[in-house]
Length: 432
Image (cartoon, rainbow, N blue to C red):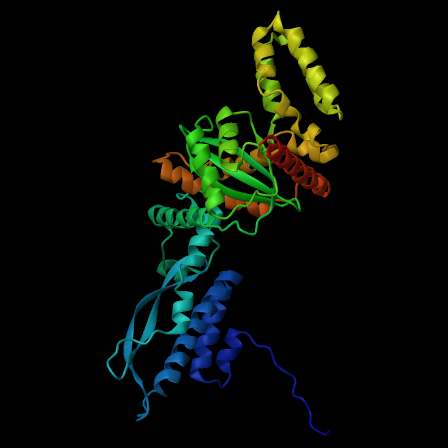
């Protein structure tokens, strides 16, 4: 109880040099003081390298015993040092790593500490995130935080070509991750399919909406939405990876006939399809003179807003008859797939969920994020590059996803899908 605590004295590097301290401590204090002048991150990186060196030496001591002492029971021995590389501060840094060899001649003993920090994955992940955020390979080095002049001189893998190689590696990993996902446990209420154009090439992408309203990127395939074989290959791949639609699913498309054909061929003839009303509206307006578009647009939207399926269908059919003589092209465009623009109405879906699913806006928002991540790509070398970048963009979009508007109404849609599927199966059995 009578002991006193001595008050700690805080000193700077100059004052520390005047104190009677061990030589190793004095050197460390001077190095830290020098790094601190270049910023906190430079200080942290400098300390990190020092800590790494100590960790490796301590691991060597644990494996072979204290330096300078002969231990008969040791199973390994020191074998000098050699150059190595670690990832630190978003860079690849050259370090001197100690070597340890097994006494029985079986080879080198790996150091766990070095293996952990030598992993390239954190570096390639940082590269991809910065590229998706809009940083070009040429400007990557300028985005690096200052880590001290001494570390900068030893840093590597920040040139344009090195960053490009890391980017190719990471986007390949993203493509493999997306296309290798198992979908066995994914229960979808809605499946959306659309295409994305990449300066001359096309990819067909698929997005799922789960029962809880969460959006899930499902996969992609190279080709156009006008090609039924491409869409069929994409959907077949989803099924092979475990996607189960036996309880019913609503397929939303932009109106491409190839997508509709593929959906029914792979998922079943009775699969309900919702055509995007915004695409249909634009297609009809393309056949009309400018002065008549606003009036026809109002009639189309009024019919699609009608909650009663019979009245909505009658209104659209009446509009098609009205347009038939003056604008036959517009009438034909409206009649093509007309009933599929009312699938949600027929299923009894209303409110904000109907507004969300009546168009392909959910998947188009994902496609917009994909395009934004690719804005700095100037030269598309081949289709494989397009697929890599699209996959990386889809995974980036997934990180930004929120549940769809109206997700609380999804249980009613799921019930309607199950009821319709059961009714059509019973009708088919009676007819057989």
